[in-house]
Length: 114
Length: 116
Image (cartoon, rainbow over all chains, first blue to last red; front, side, top):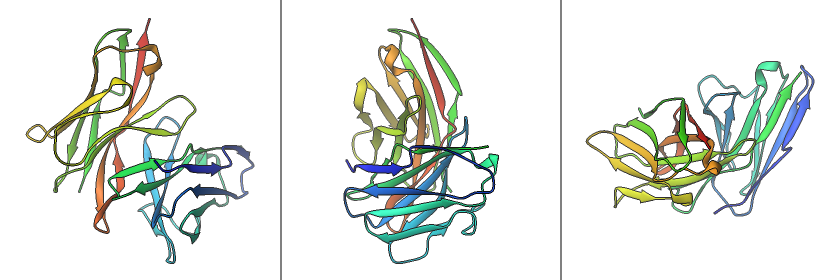
């Protein structure tokens, strides 16, 4: 399975600030996905990041709030901008493997906004 | 559009008892189905998946699930619960995206507690 590393693993942030989360994969992948898991809830897809093109955002998520970079086939960043306590969540990076039939997740980045 | 329903947000079983976590899906195309487990303070780990072929799929840690098209179900079972199985379990269905299975729609999760 793909090895997916996320940084930071945890952080406590002040409201109004921005934080960039990094996702590094040990193999080249075309698509990378960013999910959010709010406290006690399920996972919701934020956006799909393809290398060489703009990220595709899901309904309810906008680029100004969650800008994404995808500079190469093994790396992506998600920025959570102008954070509020409602942004306190786990943010997870995920990638498909092989034929795309299996999706693997990183360990997540636990963000608390105070 | 695909969707997933997990019945029972909390399930409690005794150690050694059968574990049954329910998942029903809705999909306009043949689905790919997944179960993930999330242990406390950890990310998601793939338990098992159904894509095509045999409808009874076996996963890690003694879990298995059966795809039943007629019932649109993909329930997760384990014959004998261990204390270490206490975690949250998510059922997910794939959304075909760009010709491959990539985007996942998740259920709301079931928190499994195992009592000694």
